[in-house]
Image 1 (cartoon, rainbow, N blue to C red):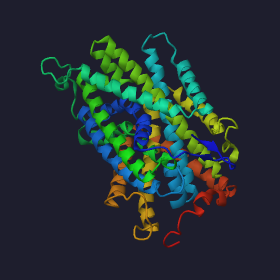
Image 2: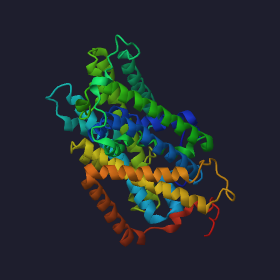
Image 3: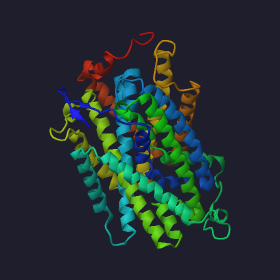
Image 4: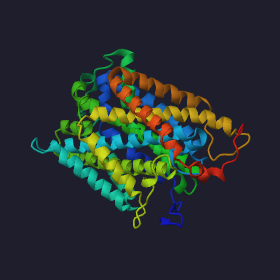
Length: 459
């Protein structure tokens, strides 16, 4: 249970354990098994897509390691945004907060796009755009109401969605030589573009895991964040890697590579290839539930990040207002809705996915830098922390290198997106430096950690 105190802040019951953190991470990310990942086949072929899945998995292992050490140390929830407040300063935290918002808003728009296309598959006469609008409005209203049970609903929906993947795997009778429907030999196309194709597939390999780093956002609600965050996050990542491998195996075994590469909902299309109506219906429901659960979580994450930025005066204080009855950051929730709708109405799934991934990759590079700076500011010999990332600075270096390589691979096919995204964040930074920074309150910006954090070394 939560309640408001006299300062209009939320007091948490600190009731979350590792299983809850696992469910939070997997809940937002699982939709990546149902759509988006297969676009990597266009860039690197079937094998390139699979290798990208596993290599990018290493990126996320390193990300969770460094995220967890810093996330269990900072005095407030907020993920990389909160870390940037104390390790990099106002301008960096403004940019990282903005990147987090757009990472989740774009993912929300992608979810809505797939929901619309999925419904259109029932009949070509169905108009997609009204369903995109209605689904986003319904989920926004759910978040506006602030039902604390919505997260439990998300966990339930995610569990069903993951179960449908296992049902599809079983239906292929992959374990039987004579009856198996899996035909990898004739369906996959190997590495048509060589090793460069693997690099090009990296960005869509991220789609299998994008958002798992959000587990650290719940640190203030854990019984023991030093145990719940690392255990829950690593368990969630293992779940996603297993699910990703199963997804690639089933889809590649049932569909030709050229068909799979352009599918909007690959698992549902794969289910239809089994010629078993019940399986197709199950995967239709699984895809729908995964998209809705993910979009719901994205609305929550994006609005909370926007609210936190407003509360810290990085953006106008107007958005740092909670609903008098529901206690939700309703102004932030409503403000971000038309942005998600605008991108959802484009109908350009790969463009929306790319902008979300680009924003996330920039955050990952900042995170790697923050980890190295964090160890210098607060050495292990002088300050205790709840979790220690092993082999430092190797995880941070691997994280930065793989994120950088992914950006290089993205450049070959989506250089306009990179240029547009960079220009957007540059203009936002100029606005902040020239205008907003003169109005922000530095005391409010660091108030939460001023009495908690020790003085860093060298400051």
